[in-house]
Image (cartoon, rainbow, N blue to C red; front, side, top):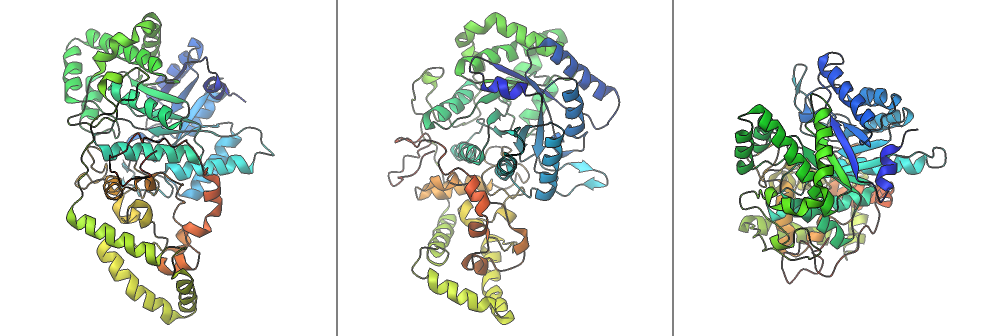
Length: 531
């Protein structure tokens, strides 16, 4: 079976080029023919290791990636299939994975996915039964299960976004990166941005923590329309600053000049990324013909050795943007520290967090002195209908009032600094932030702060930010829905004790922890505040 992409990623001498294709909303027509033409020309060009095929970008219905991927595989072009958690429950996702394996589609990009858009009859129901870490774990499970009967395995990638504005967002992204690698991710593709310091930051974090996988950096042929949408936050995770938007609009006053400038910008950023140590580049924004991508690659070959002189052209910091490393160390082997970003936590938030943390350490800790007694009492209460009624009478009002509890029966508040992942996050993420936050605000509910930003601020206040990346969190157990999470914990029924397969698959040691933490907040109480 065709395995060009996996082999190229394993070749230490190879700078890998991939190209993103975006199927349209129809299974026939000019749009699809154009995508097929681009793929055909990419295959003939010979420099493209694989094309990636998106999975309903923006959450709106489009041609599913599987059919197009299979057609391209049959024509001899390796493919990367985007696989999101938005539209299927875990049963549907496992079934889809088995179908792709049977058809030879083994390169997967595991994503949370953009929030749901409008389809037939209006907006669809967002599922997000697994998050991207859970999806990587599921694919790892399938690899392990079928290893003796099937020599081919899923080659699983994930996304990471270094283009975050605040310290809390940065930490949340890199912490989730660690969990994705722990879950079994084989490679990464970055989100899109034009800030060389941020691209450099990601590579440094990986080197300094010795926690890395081959990473492709995203490039994009930037037009005024795309730039405006990214600038307005309409394409989650992509960053175009006001300064860059003005420059792009000025360049495109003349279309020919704008097109030349877009190709030149992409080529310059491409050689910078190669110089910084990225494994390759992932080219997007090629929608009409392959010639644009070929021109970018040709230009890169001409200017490859000049990458350092182009660094000042990619200085597009976000307003009050946070950086881990000092600007003078970009492109060097020096790990200088930038200033720390204040992480405010309100008095009410601090009191609530400390209270819940203390209560949890006493009553929901398997090593606590009262744990044995609570197991005995829970076992007795579980035998009687009146016992269940009494527990719900005590449990539900408190949790609904303080946490907007959804009565899932498999509580995960301890993983998110004592916030409810069901009510607090529209994507129900239990393993870390998605890539869609903008200036610490939720992608789906911009009126509220991202729940993982609040989690970082809470954990940071007590020097325990390591809680955000150690161990993968198993998915919610739906069979416990509407039951008592208190009883389920003490009876060993919830995800913390029952999901042994998931916790076994999540690697116990992923990266070497350093004495000086890349994201150390400077809190002297913190003995574990490191990646």
